Image (cartoon, rainbow, N blue to C red; front, top):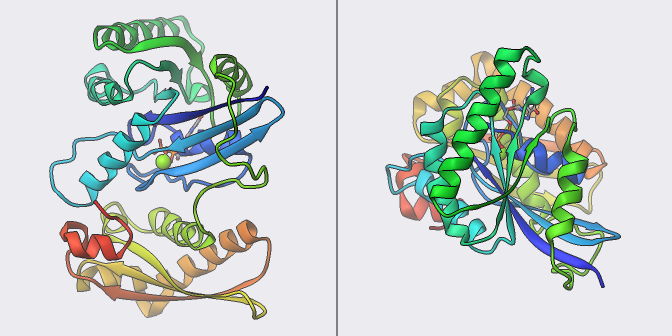
Length: 305
Ligand SMILES: Nc1nc2c(ncn2[C@@H]2O[C@H](COP(=O)(O)OP(=O)(O)O)[C@@H](O)[C@H]2O)c(=O)[nH]1
Ligand SMILES: [Mg+2]
C-alpha cells in the first residue's frame, strides 16, 4: 500500500520556503526573491514517488497582518494550509530571533497536534566555528522549548540548505516514514500542481517585478494574464500589471520604457523555460487605485478573502 499526506511548509518571510518547495519538486514552481512576502498565495507541489504521494503547500511568510487587505488574505492562506496538514515543515533562518519565531509558533497551533519538523535552513551560510555552532544549538533549544510550551509536537530537528540541497534527502526520508498509508489525493502522477498555467505565468512576471524594482513598489503590484493564445506560434500572452498610484506606474515603466522592457525580457525567458516553448509576451501597466486595501478589487485580482 502506498502512503500519502499533506505537508505545510511554514515559517517567517524569507526563510526559504519556496526555495525548498522548488528543491523537492525539482522545478521552479514557486517564485523566489530576496524580498519578504514574495509568496502571496498557497502553491501546491504534488510529489508522486514510488513510496506514494506528498502534497506540499508552500505558504506566505508569517508576519503581523494589521490591515484587512492583502496581508490579511495572506495570513488566511497560511491558516487554511495548516488546518489540513498531516505534518509541518517549519523553516527557520538561523539569523532570526526568538521573538520573531514566537509569532510563527502561535500560528502553527492552527494545525492541531501534528508532527512538526523543525528545519534550520541556509546552513551553507553558517560558519563552522565553535561560537556559531553554540549559538545555533542555543537557538534550536529556545525554539524547541517555546514550541513544546505552545503544545506543538516537535518530531525532529534538521539542518539543511534548500539552495544547495544539503540535508533535504534525509528530511524527505523522515517525512515519508511518518506518513500513513492512503490513496493519492491527485491520481494523475504527471500533475505537479493544482494551479492553471495562467497562474504560473502571472507569478513569473511578478517574480521579475520583485527582483527588478526597489523595496516598495513590488508590494503594490498585481499581475493578471488577460490573453493566453495557445493555437498560434509563438504562444501569445498578454498581461496587465496593476499598480496603486500614477507615480508607481512611471517607476515600473522606467525612463523611455527601459524598466518594463527589462522586466518583460526576463519574464519571457522564465515563462519560456517553464512552458518549454517560445512565447510572445505583451505587458501593460495600469493603475488600479489602492487595490491592496480594497475588498472588491482584491477579489477581482483573485485574492478573495
Ligand atoms: N544561502 C542560502 N540562501 C537561501 C537558501 N534558501 C533560500 N535562500 C534565499 O533566501 C531568499 C528567500 O527565499 P524564498 O524561498 O523566497 O523564501 P520564502 O519567503 O520563505 O519563500 C532568496 O534570496 C533565496 O535565494 C539557502 O539554503 N541558502
Ligand atoms: Mg515564498
